[in-house]
Length: 472
Image (tube, rainbow, N blue to C red; front, top):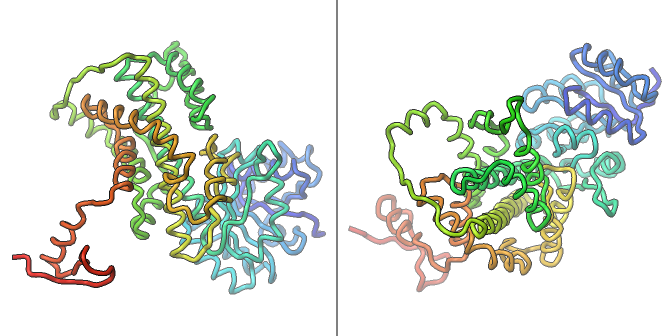
């Protein structure tokens, strides 16, 4: 077969199919392959006539032979063993300088291992973070490539072409760094997504249960919030979801079982934070909240046994809704601050030299956490690349000064009334812990020295000197 296609796409599940159409719409010649031939045949039957540069291939050898050199292959298979299996089938067929891109939600450590495996064959491997879901894949996702830096000049025109664009025309695709940085950045994106969704869910909970707000009112509230500082994809689709009715005329969201699932990236981020010593309690609590929701049967049983407060809401209803808006905004800022703290820690530990301003720019369109203040985050890191925390940036500090009183009020009233708000509470705790000149860790160190002779530093001696005492 004559080598003609610009790109090869391996895997035609939902994301793969939508990315394939996106690639074809941008004028690239595309070869497709799937281990199940039925998916290739179905895709060709539906789209082959509309795209003359679409090539179907029957096996890996034909797939690789159909591509122009250096070959650019995008793997869109399930994360984990399927990626390794696809690599092992493709690597013997590839030549030095060819490029393999893994567009799945792979663990960054797997990506680093695959980089070394591909390098043994002279193949350049890229861990490609892809965000935006099915719609983003079709219309333009946010793309976060990282891995072999020699691959970037070759794949850059292709990735920028298929990526989402901001109104000024800039593509939401940029090189993250070496190693597993691309998939790490995507993992942190997902952790922020978890937190953002949990904060919205807690806000919905308080509107629904605490303020007895109707679904039509809640839809209006979220739609209005989406026009200001809280403008974001997730707030917008929350308003949409609250307006959908079931066949019986009742809100469809109320028919959904309150047991949430996850695909692992949020848990990976929490585990990575523990390894790196990054205090991202809000991001972790968002994962644990899903885990707790999954204990549906246990929760129903516990409800009949465990008591709780029955406090009624107080205060004027309109002002409470405004407090909820400010609380959500303040907690959302903390969630992003924690996410970028985790990125900064990883960048130093793994020597990735991440440009946090460019990370924020890549997330402005196409991805799930796109929001109005990502431009402000990018500007904050442009002004000060070594900014320790977004909380210290003048723009976000001003917003927090306005909104933290509401976050405290909302969190306190929720706890008093027995409404679980783990994400809101974690946001307050991080903010207060971060601004504290003193924390009770001195007692922790004394106890550690007492039972394990771990040693401690003294406030009246230079940092780095270690002491041990008898505490009996």
